[in-house]
Length: 431
Image (cartoon, rainbow, N blue to C red; front, side):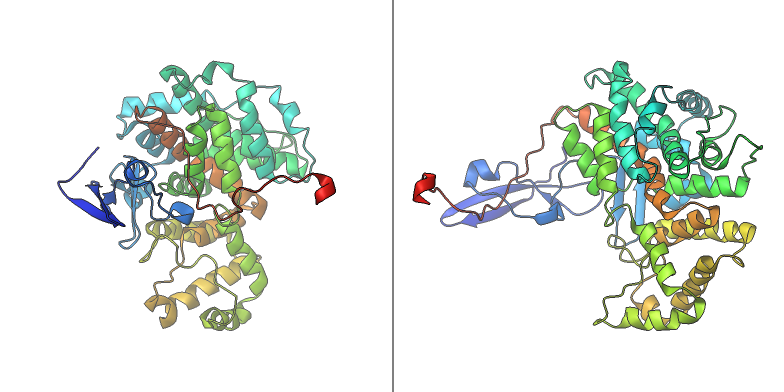
């Protein structure tokens, strides 16, 4: 673990504690407080862990002030512009971009794992037809450990490898079947002659009654959505996967925990919130009213999909996603879709307004991905499941990194206890 010659001194009453300072390859230095309780008898207090590094990692780095997102050192805009999702999956999993032969082998292995165990069909049919697709995905992914016993031993590197490939390969099938089940259509099986994104689109939109041809523009847009959401450092769902993994739980259970966390509207539901906002606005002529409301600090209304909690400058993923959104809208048109008309006009007016440009409240990746998915015909209930498909490789990469770390130990956050102290029990008659 990297360490500098520097240290920080903490004085508690008459006791002085010296805390080592660790230096990363990028980002702020970190105070090493692992021995703080043993030396000083105190914990730190950090709700949300927003100032706490819970692990060391070599996978993803974010600099919010610069608007920078790196996967293994490669900028996300370069990866999204020059690469494709499965190549980025390889990079996240193994640390380096693949050779042509390595990529072909990896793509073949993923493609040959896309089918689900046939008996899992009955698991889907146990849900109500109006079940949210995320509820189905959480249950089905967790249940994979009941079907694939040969890849649940986390101490076996080969089983970890097989589990990783299975989840990357099968997650699009699970998400597509959850969608098909919710709309009452028959399941569509994956095809080995299609690429990852095209296969997913076909499983979502094909029907047995007619042939379905995947439009390459839509396939490329879907691949970019997958790529741009592949990993995002130590966010809530990734941290959930790591915490579940620290107990030694099987990989399918850990990824199911990540899906459950992603389901929360404060995390994975951001692009859905954008579409709901567009529905609230309703028509382009109401946009000025809502822009003025967004500027009013006393009005609770906020423009969803503008600005980002992490990126204080700009979201580096948004530029690439905007290009895809423009391509998709040019292909499909917006004339018959009032929602997309509102989106295009809102984007134009916000980018022209000094209030938003000065505060760097630019459209983010959620704004554009929501537009793309709406234009493709996905209901908003499918936005977060698609996010889960994208993020699976990030969760698995972080899981593998943690399992392979010899310093791994079970997660055990502390607390600031504010409840009652010792009390004497009284018999019922005395209460």
